[in-house]
Image (cartoon, rainbow, N blue to C red; front, side):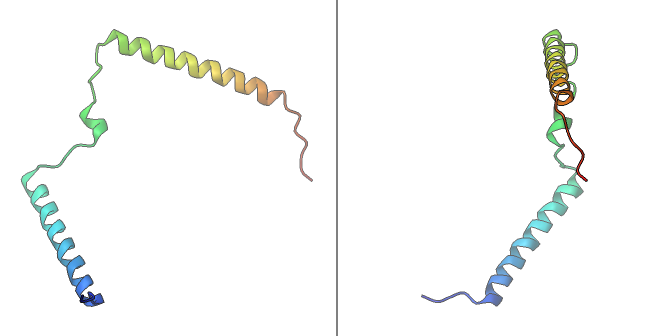
Amino acid sequence: MRSVSRSERLDARLADLEAEVARLKRTVETGQLVKPWWEQIVGAFAENSAYDAAMQLGQAYRDSRRSQSSVAIDAVDVQPII
């Protein structure tokens, strides 16, 4: 079995990179760029009362957790480090 030399490995990596760059150039030139997922779903829940209710419940939960944690922090007696 023949071992692959460092030069051959680099040549193979270079060929892979060149192929990928060519693919990316074709994608850009043809305008086939894929939007990020968050841009693809924008507006998916527009005018959806169930979504609005879920957001209100989530905010109420976060607010309740925030008020509990601030009370717990205020109750801790912290001494300054000198």
